[in-house]
Length: 117
Image 1 (spheres, rainbow, N blue to C red):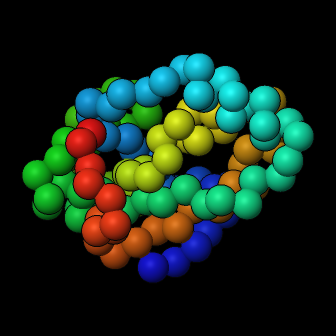
Image 2 (image 1 turned 90 degrees about the horizontal axis):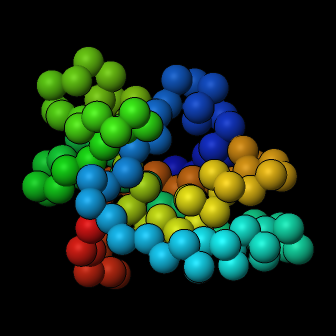
Image 3 (image 1 turned 90 degrees about the vertical axis):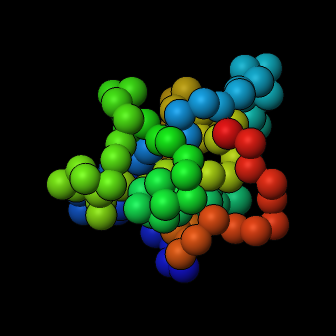
C-alpha cells in the first residue's frame, strides 16, 4: 500500500480508471463540491492496480470510456478508483486545486466493503 498525490501520479504517466458500471448520486456529488470549497480534503481516494481489479473479474474503463484489459501495454500504469467514487467526481467538478488530493493504492481490493460496481 502506498500513498501518492494525484498530480505526482499523473505526472509519472499514471492513468486513472473507473469501474465500468457505477451508480452515482449527483446530488451528493454537488454537496461534496460545495464542501470542498469550505474545507481542505483530508480523506484520500482508495485505488487498486488495474491488474488486480481485472483479476477479480470486474470490468473497468479508462478516461476515454474504453474497456481496459490485461493485455494492454500500459496496464501497469493504470489504477482503478474503488472507494468513494462520489469524491472522485466531486474533484473533477471542483474549481480549486483538486490535483493535491491523495490516492492510497492498495495491493488488493479492501475487504472492508462489499462492492457492487
